[in-house]
Image (tube, rainbow, N blue to C red):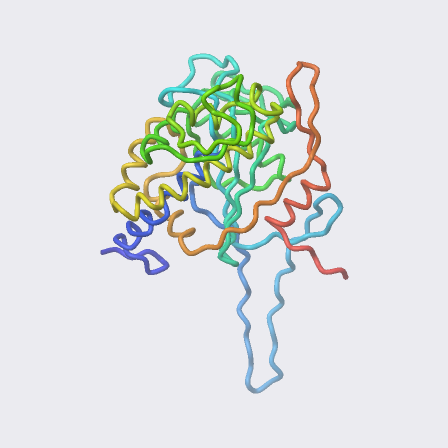
Length: 346
């Protein structure tokens, strides 16, 4: 059996995937991953001379950057993966023309800190206003437009081009943080996963009477596949109609789903592979199967950190659609927390 640089055998990685894939897929739905690249700063070797006073070769100065006026140094060994849940149904396929369909309903960034052996899931509001690239049919850059970040995916072919354009928009929003990879899933994947586990149980905390009268506020329900779609996707006719409310329901659903997936995989070691095979037709990703396994290996013993929140304000834009304007101080605090250390004052 082959070993990787960390001494993990191919068989070991397979076991890791079976243990972690439920968590990984849960992360995929609420919103990655390729290259599995890390940012590192090499330490210079220390040289000594026993016959003279010990001399240390000068260390290269750490890069100093300013984030919203705060001096910072980039953290080492950070990996970032973008997960997208799309406002589209059916199997993933290329669009013949860019007609504004296939927007991102959910966006979530997985940030892995290998130095501290932790990971964080950062939700990104789909209505966040930011710079988005407009593309020609062949992917050529045309212009940059200030718009909802969910529209970045609609500007493209619905496949890799759209995912990469969304990754560029997220990177730009987060002070140009690199995105190491991505994965997107169409909405039908919710029904697929819900069916695989026999229905996810949730307590209804919002008024669904206009969206789905079978979901009664205050009741605890094991969702059918159709109900699961309404629960995760519904917004305008649910509760206060806000995207924040939908994000809360999505997190609630995914938390319950994750527990059920873990249980199923513990009962049947082949179940995790059934999940991957069932989702593959609905997924566009820059990850190979080996990349998925490596990501699983990175996460299996890592500790999840509390997700930070990018705060801001909601309002109706000129087009009549909701716009979320980020609070720059809040955004900067989140970026610094995930990607930087504050520089020591000189």
